[in-house]
Image (cartoon, rainbow, N blue to C red; front, side):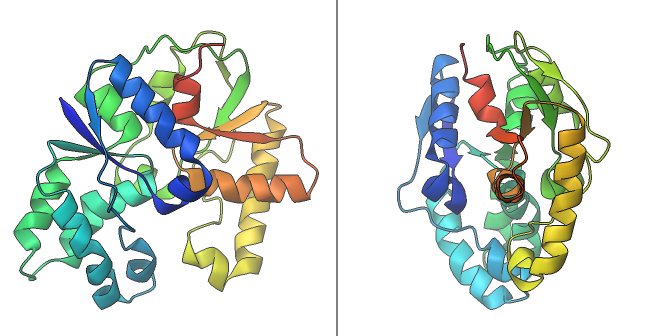
Length: 239
């Protein structure tokens, strides 16, 4: 099929390797990958801050760019929830309501798409390291995704998953939350990082680069040995 990627702003600007790995994975599986270069922000920051008119202004071009997409695969549970769940709420009663609902039906978070749409769990990846997994809030709570990423990791050669006690606990980033309430955000992140480090795992894995960015920043400033990596990077690894 033809897969249209939606790459979140922070992935595009700071973690482009995540998108590159996704392209490589899908092309290896025999699919065509497209990316609309004019795609911008999904509108989540103003939406979460209560500025819904501004969120609609950001989201309308996204609806237009993705109108003809066969399927849309998103490199984040956070932006994935925005397109799949919150666009329907944002455009309820608006002229674009039907368009938002149509897009929702065609949107998939990355791990969900591989496991539940394509029926694939083994990508032939090799990653000889211990890892622990962080469940991002939007992927877990809005999209209901707990198992797909773990099913994929279970098939990675050489990988050992060690679950942390706070796997489902928020890391404290929350986009604008971290900017508005930095002290609370930092305290939450410290709890998360401590739980990840307590496992002794070499890497903390997630499907959300924003969470990983927050956790890595805290760990680095506190001289903790924890390293972070996106799920797509592991699934594209061959050594």
